[in-house]
Image (cartoon, rainbow, N blue to C red; front, side, top):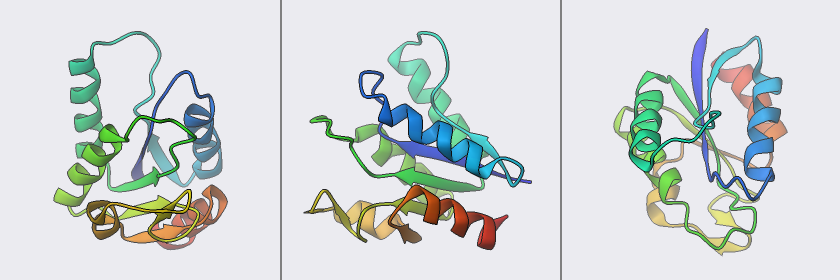
Amino acid sequence: MKSIYLGGHVNEKISATLQWRVDAERLLRGNFDVVSPVREGQRSPREIFLACHAAVARAELMLVMLDTFGSPHPMCGTYFEMAWAWERHLPIIAVAEQEGLIMGKKLDPFIVSTTTVWKPSLITATDHLIACWS
């Protein structure tokens, strides 16, 4: 069974940044070993950084949610996750409302260039993953 890393914005104050991962894990269960950067307990920023890097290094695919869920903060961690995956030649399946756009705004060329497949919703992304990559 292939392993898949769930990348994207994490903000404990915005429950949707956590809920989509729960939904993705449920939808992918039985087809993939799901690796998520969200873990219980407090960790230092360095521990989070190293744990995410190690998890991406173990993965064979990445599913990344590019929605910021209204957060004003940039998705710096997501950019790192995608760069690490790209460097390892992992396929990156991105969820975005429209290819290259989030909330009507054009995405950074680095994000656009590293993405393998664009899907408009979590359901279409997980269906694609199961059909093409499991």
